[in-house]
Length: 250
Image (tube, rainbow, N blue to C red):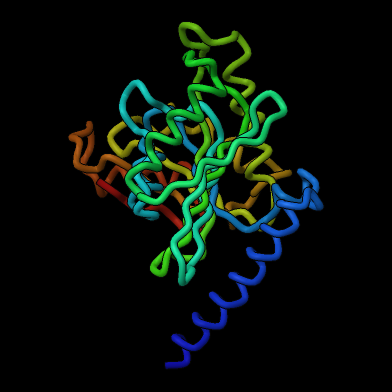
């Protein structure tokens, strides 16, 4: 009973904080630095590691996740519990603010795709322009999730040569706030060392040096790998220890 009361008080306080932050943002009274430190969960990992699928499982909001629809822009999914249902996809393009109001949760995916295509010129490039998705329903949790383009080692066809570095700078920006939880994803059946770029970024001395804000997630555990799954998880925690360890997801 005490835990239930505490959770209720926490949700009420979080809702008030988020509401105040939203009002300040709408009036342009929060600087970029202050906005970057608002509470939220940032999902980090290599391209095609399953970031969007994880966010969809947490939020219930279907995000573009087809093989040819990888995340090309930062996406902030803000969910709020409300007696009324409100859904909006917002983004800035060439100095113009766009707000797309929706009535059906199933329309969010296409609205995100439309915004992405407009921001990228319908090309396979990565741009640092935020797409904001706000979902308010009677059953929504008070939670903010941030999806970022996947980390890559080399620029792919059609990308600028500095795209890998640009993505890394983008990740650095969104994980630096002390109020941000970092959700670091790796594919369970692949070599952990080859996927450690994101962990190296998060463990930087200016970010989360001791791993207290980082939670590890091993994805695609149902895909056969070179070693038994238990051995793979244990070896990952040994090689790249995190305070809160790793969780396994299909």
